[in-house]
Length: 317
Image 1 (cartoon, rainbow, N blue to C red):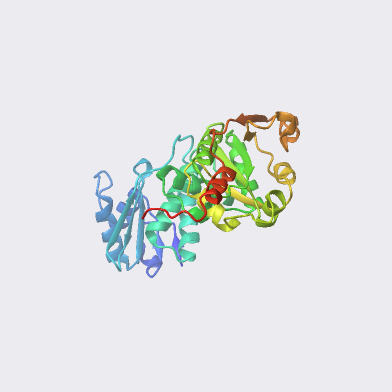
Image 2 (cartoon, rainbow, N blue to C red):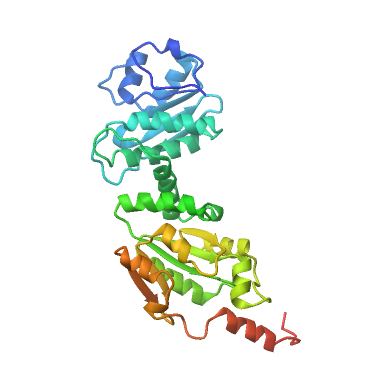
């Protein structure tokens, strides 16, 4: 795609471009319209597209957000600005152009590309001076948006160690607390959910280390797991309290904890602090260990036991 941040009053040189990104003032000047009139952004975009034969127009509107037009389909998309705190608007326009180019080059729709660009620009104006947005920042910002709207893709929560380390680095720069816990989570039940919700409440982002099938089998015996690791992680990813999930194959999560270095290490209250794997690592780095009570009578072992006791019993339809 050819994406242009236009300059000057004559846009004829941009004919055939995939997208141009003028602000309201620039659009008025290119059309010869009075700049002191608050022209609707939709009218500006449609006039620019018709006059200069440009497929996509994105009019940036400062604190009002942005409006995008696809002249082929006639689709119009508007987005409000997304900044939580505005410190400096320098570089916001350049950020929009670069992210739009990236997204359109990856075959995103203009609506999706606008969403990415809007989130990125919202992060940039929270910084002093002209600052870039880094890849890991954008990924974290988009993940945060998905969590906030309540509709994150479950697969987007399942990460590699390297990906989670990037997100943790961003969270650290923003002075946010990362909580880590681990477990098998075989046969997910209400006790797990209560535990994870409380763990999430100890910080700003919850990372779960999940035992691989081989690791769980070594820990619990040859009849386990009941649910394969890929499915266990998918179930955990559907929980609102959970931000990221990573599989580990060691007997303990010690190496994983050392890699991630969370601010808070959460574990069940049936463990004393000295028994919790990784506690020394986290505390020596200035972090905290939180012991979280389990819900009495709720455990995977109890569920399995009840199933075995009821073997051969005919259940009602």
